[in-house]
Image 1 (cartoon, helix red, strand yellow):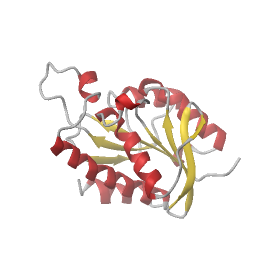
Image 2 (spheres, rainbow, N blue to C red):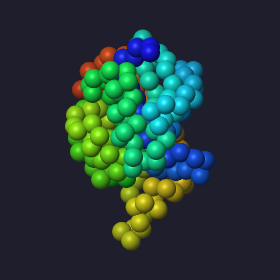
Image 3 (cartoon, rainbow, N blue to C red):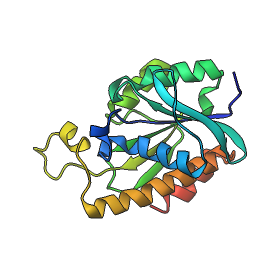
Length: 194
C-alpha cells in the first residue's frame, strides 16, 4: 500500500448517460485534475474508480465513487480507512443547486445542504467536519420543476461556459489544499472570486 496525504472525492453518477449532467460536476473536476496531472483514475477498488499521483508536492488520491450518488459514503469511508487518512485530509467535490451556475464555495465543514451524496458521506463518516468544494449548478427554472430531473439534465451553452470556468477554479482550490494551504486561505481566494 502506498501512502497518500490527501483524498479528493468527486461525486457523480457512473455511466455515459450521466456525462455532462449537473449532478456530475464533482466527476468533472476529478477528470480535469486527472488530465492536468496525468493521474489515471482507472483503478477499481472501494466501489470506485481511483488513481494516485502528486499535486502540490503531495501524494493524493482522486476518487470517483461508482455506487450512484446516494450511496457515495461507503466508498469514501473505505478509501479513508484503507489509506489510514484522517478526516482532515478529505475534500469532497459536488454540485449544489442552491448556488448560481458557475459559483464555487469552499467550506471546512457543514451540513449536507439537502444533497443526498453528502448526506450519505456524513452518515458513513459520522461527522460533517471535512472540507468540501461546492460547484453551483443553479436552481430549477421554476418551482414546479422536479429537482431530481433538474440535476440530471445538461447545461445550456451559456451555463456550460460558466461551468468550464468553475471546474478550472475548483482545480485551483484542490491544488491549494493539496499544497498544504490552510482551508481559510483557500476559502478567501476562491469564495471571493466566483
